[in-house]
Amino acid sequence: MTPLSFVLLVAAISFVAGLLGSLLGLGGGMIVVPALTLLLGIDIRLAIGASIISVIATSSGAAAAYVRDRLANLRVAMFLELGTTAGAITGAWIAGLLHPRWLFVLFGTILGYSAVAMLRPRPRDVVRHHGETRLAHRLRLHSSYFDDAQGHEVVYEPARPILGLGLMYVAGIVSGLLGIGSGALKVPAMDLAMELPIKVSTATSNFMIGVTAAASAGLYFARGQIDPFVAAPVAIGVLLGAFVGSKLLSRLGRRTLRVTFVIVLIAVSVQMLFRGIRG
Amino acid sequence: MSGIPEHEPRWVDTAISRLLRTGVVASMAVVFLGLVLTFVHHPQYVRSTSALGRLTDAGAVYPQAIGAVLAQVRQGRGQAIVMLGLLLLIATPVARVAFSILAFALERDRLYAAITTVVLLLLFLSFVLGAAG
Image 1 (tube, rainbow over the protein chains, first blue to last red):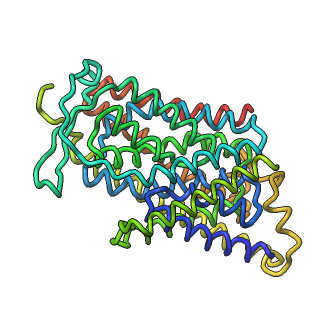
Image 2: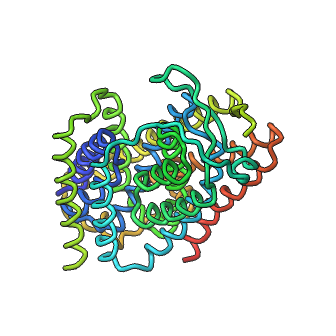
Protein backbone atom coordinates (compact mmCIF):
# COMPACT_ATOMS: atom_id res chain seq x y z
CA MET A 1 0.00 0.00 0.00
CA THR A 2 1.27 3.49 -0.76
CA PRO A 3 0.92 6.15 1.95
CA LEU A 4 -1.76 7.85 -0.17
CA SER A 5 -3.94 4.75 -0.52
CA PHE A 6 -3.42 4.06 3.19
CA VAL A 7 -4.65 7.54 4.14
CA LEU A 8 -7.69 7.21 1.85
CA LEU A 9 -8.54 3.75 3.20
CA VAL A 10 -8.24 4.92 6.83
CA ALA A 11 -10.46 7.92 6.01
CA ALA A 12 -13.09 5.66 4.41
CA ILE A 13 -13.11 3.21 7.35
CA SER A 14 -13.30 6.14 9.78
CA PHE A 15 -16.21 7.62 7.87
CA VAL A 16 -18.18 4.39 8.29
CA ALA A 17 -17.14 4.20 11.96
CA GLY A 18 -18.32 7.78 12.55
CA LEU A 19 -21.59 7.15 10.76
CA LEU A 20 -22.34 3.95 12.70
CA GLY A 21 -21.17 5.47 15.98
CA SER A 22 -23.51 8.40 15.51
CA LEU A 23 -26.50 6.26 14.48
CA LEU A 24 -26.00 3.84 17.36
CA GLY A 25 -25.19 6.57 19.87
CA LEU A 26 -21.91 4.80 20.69
CA GLY A 27 -19.39 7.36 19.47
CA GLY A 28 -16.85 6.85 16.71
CA GLY A 29 -13.95 5.78 18.93
CA MET A 30 -15.62 2.55 19.96
CA ILE A 31 -15.73 1.40 16.34
CA VAL A 32 -12.66 3.04 14.83
CA VAL A 33 -10.10 1.52 17.21
CA PRO A 34 -11.08 -2.13 16.53
CA ALA A 35 -11.35 -1.35 12.79
CA LEU A 36 -7.84 0.13 12.61
CA THR A 37 -6.21 -2.55 14.73
CA LEU A 38 -8.03 -5.69 13.54
CA LEU A 39 -8.48 -4.79 9.87
CA LEU A 40 -5.34 -2.77 9.13
CA GLY A 41 -3.01 -4.03 11.82
CA ILE A 42 -2.20 -0.53 13.06
CA ASP A 43 -0.48 -0.35 16.46
CA ILE A 44 -3.23 0.02 19.08
CA ARG A 45 -1.38 2.93 20.75
CA LEU A 46 -1.50 4.94 17.51
CA ALA A 47 -5.13 3.92 16.95
CA ILE A 48 -6.04 5.16 20.44
CA GLY A 49 -4.16 8.42 19.87
CA ALA A 50 -6.02 8.97 16.60
CA SER A 51 -9.34 8.03 18.19
CA ILE A 52 -9.02 10.55 21.02
CA ILE A 53 -8.49 13.28 18.40
CA SER A 54 -11.66 12.24 16.56
CA VAL A 55 -13.56 12.22 19.85
CA ILE A 56 -12.64 15.89 20.39
CA ALA A 57 -13.81 16.77 16.87
CA THR A 58 -17.19 15.01 17.03
CA SER A 59 -18.09 15.98 20.57
CA SER A 60 -17.16 19.64 20.06
CA GLY A 61 -19.28 19.70 16.90
CA ALA A 62 -22.25 18.11 18.66
CA ALA A 63 -21.82 20.17 21.81
CA ALA A 64 -22.05 23.38 19.79
CA ALA A 65 -25.64 22.45 18.92
CA TYR A 66 -26.59 21.27 22.42
CA VAL A 67 -25.31 24.44 24.08
CA ARG A 68 -27.21 26.57 21.61
CA ASP A 69 -30.39 24.62 22.42
CA ARG A 70 -29.63 25.11 26.14
CA LEU A 71 -29.94 21.42 26.95
CA ALA A 72 -26.42 21.11 28.39
CA ASN A 73 -26.08 22.30 31.98
CA LEU A 74 -22.83 24.28 32.01
CA ARG A 75 -22.47 24.33 35.80
CA VAL A 76 -22.94 20.59 36.11
CA ALA A 77 -20.47 20.16 33.25
CA MET A 78 -17.80 22.40 34.80
CA PHE A 79 -18.18 20.77 38.21
CA LEU A 80 -18.00 17.22 36.85
CA GLU A 81 -15.10 18.06 34.54
CA LEU A 82 -12.98 18.28 37.69
CA GLY A 83 -13.47 14.51 37.87
CA THR A 84 -13.30 13.63 34.18
CA THR A 85 -10.10 15.59 33.43
CA ALA A 86 -8.31 14.24 36.51
CA GLY A 87 -9.46 10.75 35.49
CA ALA A 88 -8.39 11.22 31.86
CA ILE A 89 -4.87 12.24 32.91
CA THR A 90 -4.70 9.21 35.24
CA GLY A 91 -5.94 6.90 32.47
CA ALA A 92 -3.61 8.23 29.77
CA TRP A 93 -0.72 7.98 32.21
CA ILE A 94 -1.56 4.35 33.12
CA ALA A 95 -1.93 3.53 29.40
CA GLY A 96 1.72 4.46 28.91
CA LEU A 97 2.78 1.88 31.50
CA LEU A 98 0.66 -1.00 30.20
CA HIS A 99 1.69 -3.55 27.60
CA PRO A 100 -0.40 -3.03 24.42
CA ARG A 101 -1.96 -6.48 24.99
CA TRP A 102 -3.70 -5.14 28.08
CA LEU A 103 -5.16 -2.33 26.01
CA PHE A 104 -6.80 -4.94 23.74
CA VAL A 105 -8.22 -6.79 26.75
CA LEU A 106 -9.57 -3.62 28.37
CA PHE A 107 -10.97 -2.34 25.10
CA GLY A 108 -12.73 -5.65 24.40
CA THR A 109 -14.27 -5.59 27.88
CA ILE A 110 -15.58 -2.03 27.64
CA LEU A 111 -16.86 -2.59 24.09
CA GLY A 112 -18.74 -5.68 25.25
CA TYR A 113 -20.26 -3.78 28.15
CA SER A 114 -21.32 -0.87 25.91
CA ALA A 115 -22.86 -3.25 23.35
CA VAL A 116 -24.94 -5.01 25.99
CA ALA A 117 -25.92 -1.66 27.52
CA MET A 118 -27.41 -0.70 24.15
CA LEU A 119 -30.07 -3.38 24.60
CA ARG A 120 -31.43 -1.81 27.75
CA PRO A 121 -34.59 0.14 27.06
CA ARG A 122 -34.03 3.86 26.99
CA PRO A 123 -34.78 5.34 30.35
CA ARG A 124 -37.85 7.52 30.44
CA ASP A 125 -38.05 10.80 32.17
CA VAL A 126 -40.03 10.57 35.32
CA VAL A 127 -40.48 13.33 37.81
CA ARG A 128 -38.50 12.22 40.80
CA HIS A 129 -38.79 13.62 44.26
CA HIS A 130 -35.62 13.18 46.16
CA GLY A 131 -34.25 14.85 49.23
CA GLU A 132 -32.40 17.95 48.22
CA THR A 133 -28.70 17.71 48.91
CA ARG A 134 -27.15 20.73 50.47
CA LEU A 135 -24.00 20.61 48.34
CA ALA A 136 -25.91 20.50 45.04
CA HIS A 137 -27.79 23.52 46.26
CA ARG A 138 -24.66 25.40 47.25
CA LEU A 139 -23.15 24.56 43.87
CA ARG A 140 -26.30 25.90 42.22
CA LEU A 141 -26.52 22.87 39.95
CA HIS A 142 -30.28 23.16 39.46
CA SER A 143 -31.58 24.45 36.17
CA SER A 144 -34.35 23.96 33.67
CA TYR A 145 -34.82 23.19 30.01
CA PHE A 146 -37.63 23.41 27.53
CA ASP A 147 -38.94 19.96 26.69
CA ASP A 148 -40.29 19.80 23.13
CA ALA A 149 -42.21 16.57 23.71
CA GLN A 150 -43.92 17.80 26.87
CA GLY A 151 -44.31 21.34 25.62
CA HIS A 152 -43.23 23.04 28.80
CA GLU A 153 -40.22 24.04 30.87
CA VAL A 154 -38.86 21.24 33.07
CA VAL A 155 -37.16 22.30 36.30
CA TYR A 156 -34.70 19.89 37.90
CA GLU A 157 -32.23 19.72 40.74
CA PRO A 158 -29.43 17.14 40.71
CA ALA A 159 -28.75 14.85 43.66
CA ARG A 160 -25.54 13.28 45.02
CA PRO A 161 -22.93 15.53 43.38
CA ILE A 162 -19.98 13.85 45.16
CA LEU A 163 -21.01 10.38 43.95
CA GLY A 164 -21.39 11.83 40.46
CA LEU A 165 -17.92 13.36 40.66
CA GLY A 166 -16.42 10.00 41.71
CA LEU A 167 -18.13 8.15 38.88
CA MET A 168 -16.88 10.80 36.45
CA TYR A 169 -13.34 10.20 37.64
CA VAL A 170 -13.78 6.52 36.69
CA ALA A 171 -15.32 7.45 33.32
CA GLY A 172 -12.35 9.78 32.74
CA ILE A 173 -9.88 6.97 33.46
CA VAL A 174 -11.57 4.72 30.89
CA SER A 175 -11.60 7.57 28.35
CA GLY A 176 -7.90 8.30 28.87
CA LEU A 177 -6.91 4.63 28.80
CA LEU A 178 -8.75 3.68 25.62
CA GLY A 179 -9.15 6.91 23.66
CA ILE A 180 -12.94 6.81 23.70
CA GLY A 181 -15.48 9.39 24.86
CA SER A 182 -16.96 6.93 27.37
CA GLY A 183 -20.39 8.52 27.11
CA ALA A 184 -21.72 5.03 27.90
CA LEU A 185 -20.39 5.57 31.43
CA LYS A 186 -21.02 9.29 31.80
CA VAL A 187 -24.72 9.27 30.92
CA PRO A 188 -25.75 6.57 33.47
CA ALA A 189 -23.70 8.36 36.14
CA MET A 190 -25.68 11.54 35.61
CA ASP A 191 -28.98 9.83 34.95
CA LEU A 192 -28.95 7.27 37.77
CA ALA A 193 -26.67 8.76 40.42
CA MET A 194 -27.44 12.44 40.00
CA GLU A 195 -31.03 11.95 38.81
CA LEU A 196 -30.73 14.42 35.96
CA PRO A 197 -33.26 14.25 33.10
CA ILE A 198 -31.93 11.97 30.36
CA LYS A 199 -31.89 14.75 27.76
CA VAL A 200 -29.81 16.94 30.03
CA SER A 201 -27.50 13.99 30.86
CA THR A 202 -26.89 13.22 27.20
CA ALA A 203 -26.26 16.83 26.20
CA THR A 204 -24.06 17.58 29.21
CA SER A 205 -22.09 14.36 28.69
CA ASN A 206 -21.38 15.35 25.10
CA PHE A 207 -20.30 18.78 26.27
CA MET A 208 -17.83 17.29 28.76
CA ILE A 209 -16.38 14.66 26.42
CA GLY A 210 -14.32 17.21 24.44
CA VAL A 211 -12.60 18.58 27.53
CA THR A 212 -12.04 15.08 28.91
CA ALA A 213 -10.49 13.98 25.61
CA ALA A 214 -8.31 17.11 25.43
CA ALA A 215 -6.84 16.21 28.83
CA SER A 216 -5.63 12.82 27.62
CA ALA A 217 -4.79 14.07 24.11
CA GLY A 218 -2.19 16.41 25.64
CA LEU A 219 -0.43 13.44 27.20
CA TYR A 220 -0.73 11.35 24.05
CA PHE A 221 0.66 14.15 21.91
CA ALA A 222 3.63 14.77 24.15
CA ARG A 223 4.32 11.04 24.27
CA GLY A 224 4.36 10.74 20.45
CA GLN A 225 1.20 8.65 20.04
CA ILE A 226 -0.36 11.06 17.57
CA ASP A 227 0.78 9.94 14.10
CA PRO A 228 -0.33 12.47 11.45
CA PHE A 229 -0.78 9.74 8.81
CA VAL A 230 -3.25 7.92 11.07
CA ALA A 231 -4.80 10.73 13.15
CA ALA A 232 -5.55 13.11 10.25
CA PRO A 233 -7.68 10.71 8.14
CA VAL A 234 -9.34 9.31 11.28
CA ALA A 235 -10.34 12.76 12.54
CA ILE A 236 -11.66 13.94 9.16
CA GLY A 237 -13.39 10.62 8.39
CA VAL A 238 -15.09 10.18 11.76
CA LEU A 239 -16.20 13.82 11.86
CA LEU A 240 -17.79 13.66 8.40
CA GLY A 241 -19.38 10.28 9.18
CA ALA A 242 -20.85 11.56 12.43
CA PHE A 243 -22.14 14.67 10.69
CA VAL A 244 -23.91 12.64 8.02
CA GLY A 245 -25.23 10.29 10.72
CA SER A 246 -26.75 13.19 12.66
CA LYS A 247 -28.57 14.32 9.52
CA LEU A 248 -30.11 10.91 8.91
CA LEU A 249 -33.16 11.56 10.97
CA SER A 250 -34.46 8.02 11.10
CA ARG A 251 -32.34 6.98 14.03
CA LEU A 252 -31.88 3.25 14.27
CA GLY A 253 -35.01 2.77 16.30
CA ARG A 254 -35.92 -0.58 14.83
CA ARG A 255 -35.09 -3.17 17.36
CA THR A 256 -34.04 -5.92 14.94
CA LEU A 257 -31.42 -3.65 13.38
CA ARG A 258 -30.13 -2.61 16.78
CA VAL A 259 -29.89 -6.21 17.92
CA THR A 260 -27.93 -7.10 14.77
CA PHE A 261 -25.38 -4.41 15.52
CA VAL A 262 -25.13 -5.46 19.15
CA ILE A 263 -24.26 -9.00 18.02
CA VAL A 264 -21.61 -7.66 15.62
CA LEU A 265 -20.13 -5.45 18.34
CA ILE A 266 -20.01 -8.34 20.79
CA ALA A 267 -18.21 -10.43 18.16
CA VAL A 268 -15.71 -7.58 17.68
CA SER A 269 -15.19 -7.26 21.43
CA VAL A 270 -14.47 -10.99 21.67
CA GLN A 271 -11.90 -10.62 18.88
CA MET A 272 -10.24 -7.74 20.72
CA LEU A 273 -10.09 -9.89 23.86
CA PHE A 274 -8.52 -12.79 21.91
CA ARG A 275 -5.98 -10.48 20.37
CA GLY A 276 -5.00 -9.29 23.81
CA ILE A 277 -4.80 -12.74 25.37
CA ARG A 278 -2.97 -14.44 22.51
CA GLY A 279 -0.73 -11.44 21.85
CA MET B 1 -34.58 24.56 46.31
CA SER B 2 -35.18 28.15 45.35
CA GLY B 3 -37.42 27.17 42.45
CA ILE B 4 -35.87 29.78 40.24
CA PRO B 5 -34.11 28.07 37.35
CA GLU B 6 -30.67 29.48 36.92
CA HIS B 7 -29.40 29.87 33.41
CA GLU B 8 -26.22 31.14 32.02
CA PRO B 9 -26.91 34.33 30.11
CA ARG B 10 -27.74 33.81 26.48
CA TRP B 11 -24.54 35.43 25.21
CA VAL B 12 -22.40 32.84 26.99
CA ASP B 13 -24.24 29.96 25.27
CA THR B 14 -23.98 31.59 21.87
CA ALA B 15 -20.30 32.45 22.26
CA ILE B 16 -19.37 28.93 23.42
CA SER B 17 -21.34 27.39 20.57
CA ARG B 18 -19.54 29.59 18.03
CA LEU B 19 -16.15 29.01 19.58
CA LEU B 20 -16.52 25.22 19.38
CA ARG B 21 -17.81 25.23 15.83
CA THR B 22 -15.12 27.61 14.56
CA GLY B 23 -12.38 25.63 16.30
CA VAL B 24 -13.45 22.34 14.75
CA VAL B 25 -13.90 23.72 11.22
CA ALA B 26 -10.67 25.76 11.25
CA SER B 27 -8.53 22.95 12.67
CA MET B 28 -9.89 20.39 10.21
CA ALA B 29 -9.14 22.77 7.33
CA VAL B 30 -5.52 23.11 8.53
CA VAL B 31 -5.23 19.30 8.86
CA PHE B 32 -6.54 18.82 5.34
CA LEU B 33 -4.18 21.47 3.94
CA GLY B 34 -1.23 19.83 5.68
CA LEU B 35 -2.20 16.44 4.29
CA VAL B 36 -2.39 17.78 0.75
CA LEU B 37 0.98 19.55 1.14
CA THR B 38 2.57 16.35 2.44
CA PHE B 39 1.67 14.50 -0.75
CA VAL B 40 2.65 17.45 -2.95
CA HIS B 41 6.10 17.63 -1.29
CA HIS B 42 6.60 13.87 -1.33
CA PRO B 43 5.44 12.52 -4.68
CA GLN B 44 6.94 9.13 -3.77
CA TYR B 45 4.17 8.78 -1.09
CA VAL B 46 1.66 8.57 -3.92
CA ARG B 47 3.47 5.86 -5.90
CA SER B 48 5.86 3.95 -3.70
CA THR B 49 4.83 1.38 -1.12
CA SER B 50 8.13 1.36 0.74
CA ALA B 51 7.59 4.41 2.94
CA LEU B 52 4.35 3.33 4.64
CA GLY B 53 5.87 1.08 7.30
CA ARG B 54 8.22 3.84 8.39
CA LEU B 55 5.44 6.46 8.56
CA THR B 56 2.87 4.46 10.52
CA ASP B 57 5.12 2.44 12.79
CA ALA B 58 4.77 2.94 16.53
CA GLY B 59 8.39 4.08 16.53
CA ALA B 60 7.85 6.72 13.83
CA VAL B 61 9.13 10.06 15.06
CA TYR B 62 7.03 13.20 14.74
CA PRO B 63 7.43 16.50 16.54
CA GLN B 64 6.10 16.01 20.06
CA ALA B 65 6.51 19.49 21.44
CA ILE B 66 4.59 22.59 20.43
CA GLY B 67 7.85 24.47 19.72
CA ALA B 68 9.12 21.73 17.41
CA VAL B 69 5.82 21.68 15.50
CA LEU B 70 5.90 25.45 15.00
CA ALA B 71 9.53 25.40 13.85
CA GLN B 72 8.72 22.83 11.17
CA VAL B 73 5.55 24.66 10.14
CA ARG B 74 7.73 27.67 9.36
CA GLN B 75 9.72 25.45 7.00
CA GLY B 76 6.44 24.56 5.29
CA ARG B 77 6.51 20.87 6.21
CA GLY B 78 3.13 19.27 5.48
CA GLN B 79 3.27 16.78 8.34
CA ALA B 80 3.99 19.60 10.80
CA ILE B 81 0.99 21.53 9.44
CA VAL B 82 -1.16 18.43 10.05
CA MET B 83 0.16 18.34 13.63
CA LEU B 84 -0.57 22.06 14.01
CA GLY B 85 -4.17 21.42 12.91
CA LEU B 86 -4.48 18.56 15.40
CA LEU B 87 -3.07 20.82 18.14
CA LEU B 88 -5.62 23.51 17.24
CA LEU B 89 -8.33 20.87 17.60
CA ILE B 90 -7.00 19.82 21.02
CA ALA B 91 -6.88 23.53 21.94
CA THR B 92 -10.56 24.05 21.09
CA PRO B 93 -12.04 22.56 24.29
CA VAL B 94 -9.18 24.16 26.24
CA ALA B 95 -10.17 27.55 24.81
CA ARG B 96 -13.78 26.82 25.76
CA VAL B 97 -12.68 26.26 29.37
CA ALA B 98 -10.55 29.43 29.36
CA PHE B 99 -13.47 31.40 27.95
CA SER B 100 -15.79 29.99 30.64
CA ILE B 101 -13.48 31.36 33.36
CA LEU B 102 -13.82 34.80 31.82
CA ALA B 103 -17.60 34.45 31.51
CA PHE B 104 -18.02 33.30 35.12
CA ALA B 105 -15.75 36.13 36.31
CA LEU B 106 -17.79 38.70 34.39
CA GLU B 107 -20.93 37.31 36.03
CA ARG B 108 -19.14 37.69 39.40
CA ASP B 109 -19.48 33.97 39.99
CA ARG B 110 -16.33 33.37 42.03
CA LEU B 111 -17.07 29.75 42.90
CA TYR B 112 -17.40 28.65 39.28
CA ALA B 113 -14.53 30.84 38.11
CA ALA B 114 -12.40 28.94 40.66
CA ILE B 115 -13.72 25.47 39.67
CA THR B 116 -13.11 26.25 36.00
CA THR B 117 -9.60 27.52 36.71
CA VAL B 118 -8.74 24.19 38.35
CA VAL B 119 -10.00 22.35 35.24
CA LEU B 120 -7.81 24.56 33.03
CA LEU B 121 -4.78 23.87 35.24
CA LEU B 122 -5.46 20.12 34.94
CA LEU B 123 -5.49 20.46 31.15
CA PHE B 124 -2.09 22.21 31.18
CA LEU B 125 -0.81 19.60 33.61
CA SER B 126 -1.53 16.89 31.03
CA PHE B 127 0.86 18.47 28.52
CA VAL B 128 3.54 18.93 31.18
CA LEU B 129 3.17 15.36 32.42
CA GLY B 130 3.35 13.94 28.89
CA ALA B 131 6.49 15.94 28.12
CA ALA B 132 8.10 14.86 31.40
CA GLY B 133 7.26 11.16 31.03
